Image (cartoon, rainbow, N blue to C red; front, side):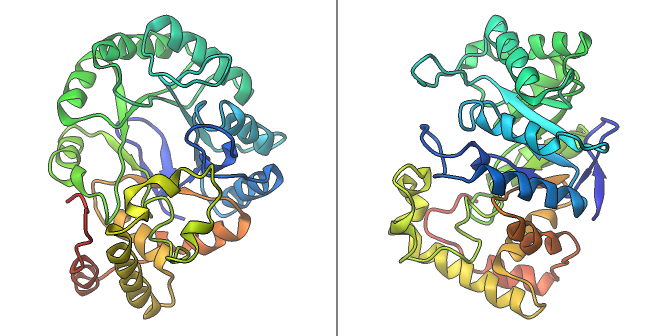
Length: 320
């Protein structure tokens, strides 16, 4: 496993992080379908065995369930990985999710996450979304307060624009940003990545396989078979006219990877790690075998010719 410093923090993080969105299970607004808890726990422990030393979760994932599963997976371990979680999307008694960045709400969320994760300090606490915009400054100041109080070790943000990042580093001791990044979503290359490099911000990207679309396991036949509560069924990239061109890109990833004994999934993840501005990438992993199938992406190096071949396909609707 390879490790890289997360921004100006002392954290040395593995190039791949364990994404615990799916561990939240199904039955909530942004779920990815049913998930077996025992398999989630086994996957987390397998990831740790292979050198992955950070887990990305959020209270939103399963309305607290993902954080609880992470705590169960880490129970009894003497050498625990870093746990990164988020705030800003609380829910009410009937499970309705809202955006709220008020100080009182964030403090309530933080205390709930500490309880669910069974810890006294969160390694990296991130603002999940930049909404509502008029509350972002209040949220940043609150996270800085929580940092001084010892409840969170480091401050991060997710899905922020370059302008918002500039504001964030003026208000708090920001160490990282978490944006989406994949061959189907390259918007951060224009402004976000250069800004982070210039300001020594860590970058932990999510959805390197675009919610599994570039994994090599999705086909036009399997997508309709996804559970009804799987958010991906409603996304445009999983439907025509984008689907066919996206699957053509996946086929290209499989072709390039095959020359090195690598899968389409490993190739997609390796592509994100090829960018020097990227600290690490979050990979959603449901089962231990999924960990085994992706870990090789860390040491996988794509040549200039490989990159040109992969990037030669511009899928319909891709953000570049």
